[in-house]
Amino acid sequence: MLRRTFAGVLAGAALALPLVAVSATPAAAAPEILATTLTYDDSQAGEFKTQVAAGVNVWNTSVTNVRIVKATPGQRVNIRVVATDGWPQANLGPVRPTGTATVWMGREAVNQGYNVVRIAAHEIGHTLGLPDIKPGPCSSLMSGSTGGVSCQNTNPNSSEAARVQRNYAGTAAVSTNAVLTDAA
Image 1 (cartoon, one colour):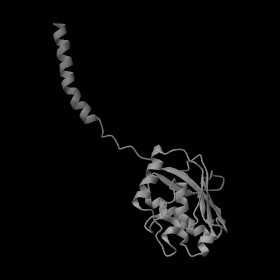
Image 2: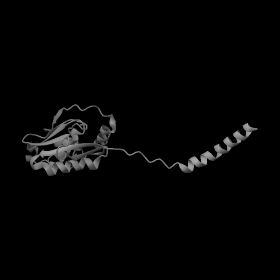
Image 3: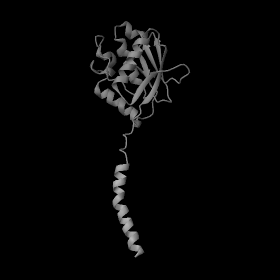
Image 4: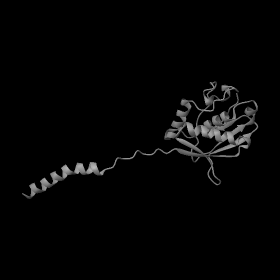
C-alpha cells in the first residue's frame, strides 16, 4: 500500500513538473557575437590622419567580425600607419590582437592623383588579410592602382567584405607578415 501511495505521488509530481518547468524557465537569450578589436596608431601618418580615419571607418561599417579603433596612449598597437615618400604598401594579415602590421601611406601614389581614402582603406584591407586583385575593376577596393586614378570607390565589394568576415570568424590562418607593395 505504501508503494502505491509513493508511486501515486511520483506520478502526480511528474504530471505537475512539466507545467512548473515550462512556466518557470525563461527563454534563453541569443549568445552575443563579439568582434575582434584591433588598434591603430596614426602618430606617424603625417598629413594622412584624416584619410586614415576615413579608411578605418570604411572597414568598421563594412564588416562586423573585426573593429578597428584608435589606440590610446600606452595601449598595445596592432596597426601602425606611417607616411612615406614611396609607393603605398602594407603587411599582409590577418593581423590578430597579439600581432602587429604596418601601413605605409606612400606619397608617390597621392602625387599621381590616386584617392587617398581609397589608398588607406586598400592598405588596411591588406592588414585584414586581403591580397591585391590585379588587374581589377574600380568596384574592387583591392584592385588598388589598376582601378585607375579616376577611381573614387573607397568601399570593399561584397566578396572582399565576406573574406574579412571569414578571416575574423576564428578560422583564418596565422598571418604571413609579408609586405605587399601596391605599385602598378
